[in-house]
Image (cartoon, rainbow, N blue to C red; front, side, top):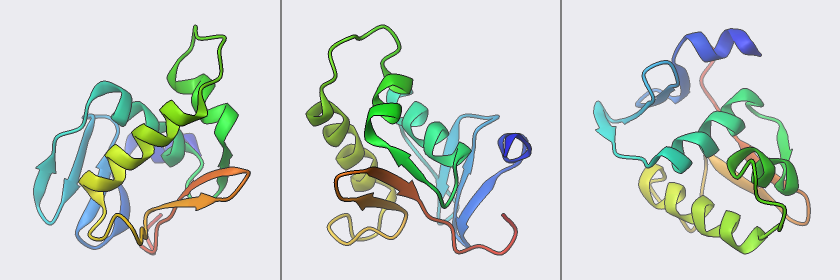
Length: 111
């Protein structure tokens, strides 16, 4: 899915990720995300609509960290959800797959 990284990835009509420009747009407004939050979205977007195992996501975000701290990953997932989701407690973009990992969902037909 490398072709996705060169164009905006629409999650729905008013919400998209532009990885080339390192921005997330929601309802026409840019959403401020930290470097690690963008890295998290980048990894999930690379596997759009597919499950990314928690361990794989953690290792992608913290390259040199040998200690696996999934609680830290959970903190970042929640930070991103609070910024991009309309209802973070009932997410429609970043979905948890219990005991496995996370999935970035897109309902937009262009992806």
